[in-house]
Image 1 (cartoon, rainbow, N blue to C red):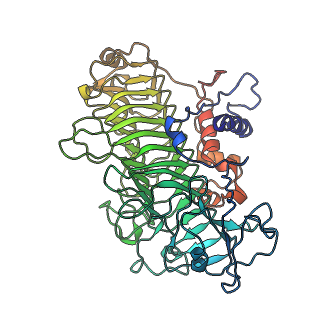
Image 2 (cartoon, helix red, strand yellow):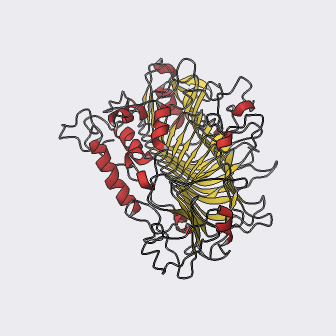
Image 3 (cartoon, rainbow, N blue to C red):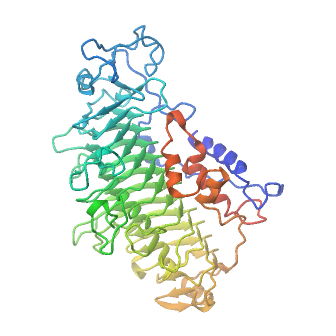
Length: 601
């Protein structure tokens, strides 16, 4: 059901947004709608609640739930909690029909909730609380009877919790929905700002399993906004068990995380199984541009160690339909590090599906830091239907690089139907779309488009010879109007390349590198066994489409600050499908249909 709905929405948006071809009146053009990959087999491990028609989780109290209302105009002395059957509640606990008696203090209200019960703590929308410590969530009864921290009322604004976030160390089977958490004392533009010399690192949400904590799974975080913290964490111990499972983070806004001492990520995770869906990650890991040593953290400078997401030893994880914008370094940083002298799979079952990446300096890093050169460290990795654009444009760390996708030491995987487009210039010269190295086996690269990326090196790289086995590279377009090299090939015994389209303005005798020497198309074909690829100037219907042209089609301002401001208005009370990764990716992808081809590609 999820995928058929997505296809219908995408088709409608494509047809509405200035058509897919050069003209909306071209009756011969019939756009092909990209099909999402089948659901990952591990998706069934997530206990995603039933959703309403607009895709929001439906949470329903149990007969023994306590409904605990909180308002800054409440009174702890007269407040009481309710049952869902009480007359004041009606059919919707989030919009009680009668006059409820709310608590004023969050701590007093939280004390009424019972660990192990499906109790609801509901904050009045539009109210603000200032905290001196994190909110400690308790566990619910089960994945279908969660402890809930959410909201009530019809005010368009989320309830706001200032200065501190959430402690989830003992919060299995809980849900946090529809609340804004802001560390305003860390926001240099806020009157609450305490100065860079006085700020401390504070997590927006901190889920730490093990270490005498009871968090194991069943967590849902939805429709929240975490702003100006130093990061957010979902982490298991550095052992094989326990591992956090069934972590669901969806339709949240995570912005402006930075640190002046230590690393900062939008979301850091280690040894966990997470569904990350339809979130907005923007400007995480930094407050201001870095300097020439690439690691100075003063006043929240961008460094190469900070990212929108940083996942270590992930397993059974899905990234789907998220926006990853303006990272300090990587949109997604993954590591699967092995001790010296070992050969061990430490990350497996990842699906990175239909996300949008804009700016930062690296799109998706799936290689990791510690390559011991002993064999694969990753297994069953799928990177499909993503759009990466303008990587490196603003040089957050001042490095002159724009790197798309790193593939290193994979044992099985797919890189399919991704678009790498529009980055690089005379200054930003260290660019590539795909960099594939190491002990990688049985990885298929199909139907990807690399478009108009000038490179000081090579746009697509297959290196490391005999350790890189059974690779297929078919039906891809590598197209640039610059004098860039297109593909490096140093594999051995490989016959899995074919039906690709290549174009560059470089001397055709130097389009390729084969075993680190210049090569023509014919020489590359002889080395690779690729007899079906061609030199071909593809004619796309609208390849210059970008996020900026998309925003212009909506009559919105086209600069990234304005785009981020629009995204920060997204919520259940103000959800605009036109500002989702699905809509933007569909618009950009339709521009890469082949002119005159009724089947798009």
